[in-house]
Image (cartoon, rainbow, N blue to C red; front, side, top):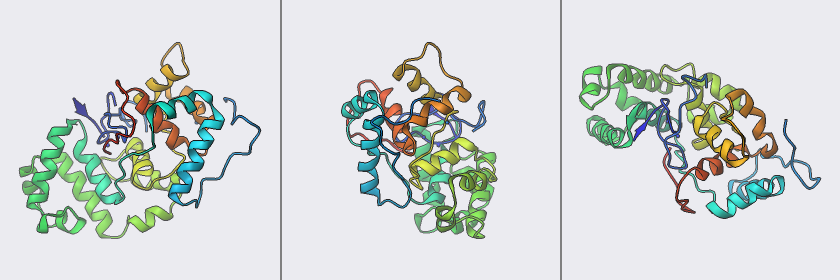
Length: 262
């Protein structure tokens, strides 16, 4: 099974989804949110600045109140437990390595890359100490080697950093990340969701999400990215959570509590 540009059914922007499925890239061929608002007459909760565990509880209650079908899906899937890669540099490196190759091949390359990095650690400085020849010796294509060096330089120079990215708005993260070679909108959205843990990301270009929406709602046809954008409005400001559960709904059989890898 192949994985493309990071978290498809046909991706090429990176590793697999937090649901553990390969997720199609929203960068190519797609470029990478009306429907009823929440039920019950409640105001939409605010997601910003809420501690993580409290936010999880608030998010799941909001999804349940907003849509009885989503409530049933939450019961079916179980706890919200995506795999999180909290270091944005590590997340972006993993995304690039996973582009258009199998998970097994990506794991092998990451192991070889650690072996040639000083101290066995993939860090901006340890990558920049390697030339393209040594990176290619770890199994990377020339193009991917160039992408990784560009990401490493950006973090080493301080153009990007974990602290800067965490201070940015979602739109600013997407703008900054997609300036890097090899990083498209879909990878930037996965960075927001599964590294920076932003609660309200809706990657409407993603084929896996659109396939899940078609089955879940249900719809007669696969929605286009444009049609899929407003379909998440009912779950705002916790669309990241809804997206993860929708991705998990595609798994057969569904195994509650099983997290995947970004």
